Image (cartoon, rainbow, N blue to C red; front, top):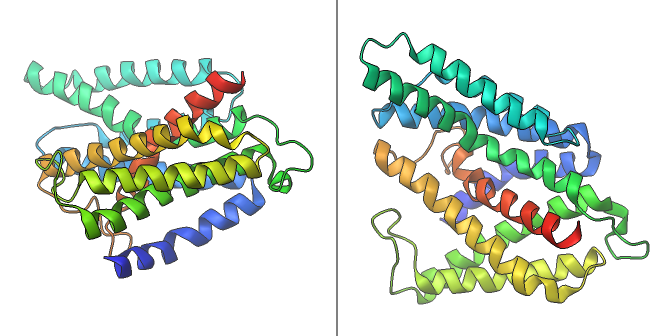
Length: 274
């Protein structure tokens, strides 16, 4: 398992590091590519599960939602989602069975919206508070610094949940969705995410004690994102979302935690600092 995670890291980490170093449009590009591939994988799983959809429309809509997320206003994203829902409904009119049309409409909107949740990575960067001069991570700036907090927070939760769960895990939860999840792993992951979040907050010039709220929020949302994708794969009878990453399936298998964690951390930042 650790070897598989290492192989997937070799594929994913370099573009992430390059994007964080360069910032700005490079981060947008990485997120847009990940969302586009994730949308293709989402619609493939939905079709396998027996849910028809207009995959091409949903994929285009998902990528456009990422691009409009760079706007300082939320209105363009809401308007695009509304237009996309209308177009999906119009496209579904061609289904001869109205029940198939309704499913197609709903599935297309869901399939676009679900992977596009990763666009909140960009909203987090835009909403993050300024890093005080003299803070250890001041050179990163607000955008890159808070995105780094999200990345390391989710990775620390995932890593500690795996290690602690493997060593001490006995009692399991939601085994009908993901049989490997244990309460011990959940606790270990939350502790790991909280510690790493505290260190990153201090590095960004914020009180480390804020991690007592942000750490568990980040960890629990990451776990929920993982379980949501597992539910989708279970419905499709699939082990992985794809075969793009050697040893670890598709892009969706690697960004699933971020799909829920990014909006949760963005909500915290907006509530706490604005």
